[in-house]
Amino acid sequence: MKRTPFYEKHVEHNGMLIDFGGWELPVEYTGIIPEHEAVRSKAGLFDVSHMGEVTVVGKDAEAYIQKMITNDISTMEPYQIYYSPMCYEDGGVVDDLLVYKYNTQKYFIVINAANTEKDVAWFLSHVTEDVVVEDVSAKYAQLALQGPLAQVILQKLTDKNLDEIKFFHFCDSVMLGTVEAFVSRNGYTGEDGFEILIAPKDAGILWDAIMAAGKDEGLIPCGLGARDTLRFEACLPLYGHEITDSISPLEAGLGYFVKLDKEDFIGRDALRRQNEQGLTRKLCGIEMVDRGIPRAGYPIFNGDFQIGHVTTGSYSPTLKKNIGLVLLETPYTTLDTIVEVGIREKRLKAKVVPKTFYQKKYKK
Amino acid sequence: MKILEELMYTKTHEWIKLEDHKATLGLTDYAQKHLGQIVFVDLPNVGEHVDELGQLAEVESVKAVSEVYSPVSGKIIETNEDLLDNPGLINEDPYENWLATIEMNGPLVTSNLLNSEDYGKLCDQLEEEAK
Image (cartoon, rainbow over all chains, first blue to last red; front, side):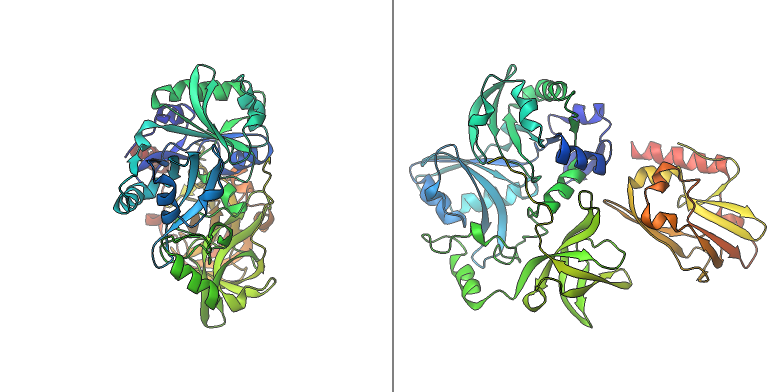
């Protein structure tokens, strides 16, 4: 298994280590629920070094990325970040990613850990003459500092006024104590916060500095378990669950990030067709009526017919309810529709609810 | 890890307390620690029959679903309904917060059970393997 530069810190904090897509990472330290609550009310620190990073450089960099992804990056300012799905010709999703723009000839892209190899191969197979794509994943360690007190904590380590880094923007050189870092204001929890990229050699120093700075604010290290429950409550999609090579971004409710009217991009025709013909299935929220917890992969029924499946489901630590994201056939997606979840041999009632379970608290 | 000397145990991390023909069952400290915070418990109905090594209950943590098996067969005569609203009680004290009481309808099959010493050894061995 691969280890991140923070491995010693996970051991030091008694992290429960698991194999996550080939990476040895902590699923929790003190417990998913306390970690989840810390991020909602105070702050949590996550090792996200397993994420992949790619640079796209060259005269045609903008045009190349426009072709590869569904969002329209022509409206981006320098040092801004856009979220976007990246699709196959048939509209299925290769991955979802973040594009960081320096200028029209230089971009930095963050991709999912488990998809890094596949994505890099996909990028390279479409590369044009004046574009250089490079996998730079090994050059970075990455932390996510998330929660309402994230800025208060990080500000203690730097002279840079962090108010200057706006939501979904970045600064590529911020001194955090003695460590030079690439800092962006974004995350995967539904809270305000930062993602911080540094050289692997500085990992231990920065981890300790941030933990020390957050001591009085109640900062705790958080694992993959809380990362998943936090993003799920905020209805942030996870590749392999809400989006896959057979679930389109339109079906997953990500239409805002699919600019069907921009210049040609891979998957445009299929997605336009899907849009014109109307979606046959859509991502919705459900809340259990009967006692039970919906979980990924469980079937959803209407009478004898399967009408969908759970993409992610859990007990929600914030709402204290059992909820799920489900991909449902369109006729059943009206709010308050009663459906049945197949939980082992039982059929348990749930009702369709808005999928924005938790109102995101971004600082914009 | 807490193991009470006066109880019997299963290899699947249930504890059992025997009084005449009645057996009270719960989850061990090892089980609750490994599951993490328990957020859901599904109990059998009083009056139902449970088979030897049959499923008695389900407990779920945030991440995991776990089935609870009964080492004895018989009729469910009582369940701990406090757990339905407060499943986390199991984490607080897994020995105090029992799941169900069964009226046994046959002799005790001791091959399904471990004494506290042997159960302790099993847990140590599992901890060792996890490292």
